[in-house]
Length: 239
Image 1 (tube, helix red, strand yellow):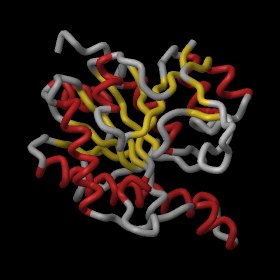
Image 2 (cartoon, one colour; image 1 turned 90 degrees about the horizontal axis):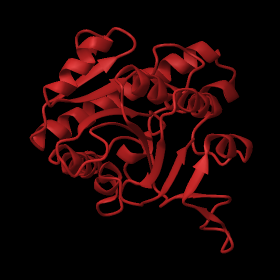
Image 3 (cartoon, one colour; image 1 turned 30 degrees about the horizontal axis):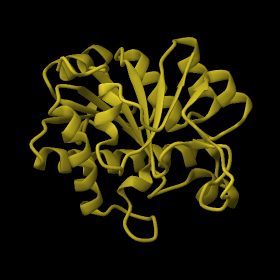
């Protein structure tokens, strides 16, 4: 543990990390791959909490709002999608040997614990991975914002935004050979340049509370390990 720079981390993953071919649904093999990435940093002694999106199951704007659905209804459906992903990841983590608890912002006591801040911290202190499902429990807030909020509440030392790209760029590097790669950004730069790191509410919350954001390719070898050790990887957004 002495080699760790960050001992308590919150990992934000998109629902696409759980998806099978075509980017839809839940592929247990992908959940197992994600679990191995998390296991690597838990074995170093890091306390790990997660927020996972639900875009592989339901996209409120595209699937609901664009077809006349009420925003609150669409958002509640999105929250339930994140719970399904949380349960799938919990299963994969426990098969990997990591005790895991799913806590939800809306009460679904038959499948998960209701979110209680002090209980979540106690789980982390006991070496359990904690997955926060159902976002903040409120419509109109994204899972990015939920990740920032939960990170503050559990006193996380860094928020890791897991992506499929190795860093933040000023434009899509797959389509633009001249895309500029950033190693470091300030919160204000990330907001003003609209780089899509996280939504503006989430970044502003991290800025107000001086919580660094690390943007990395979660599938790259040892990327998460490098983050918790403080080694240069991806893009860091900080004050």
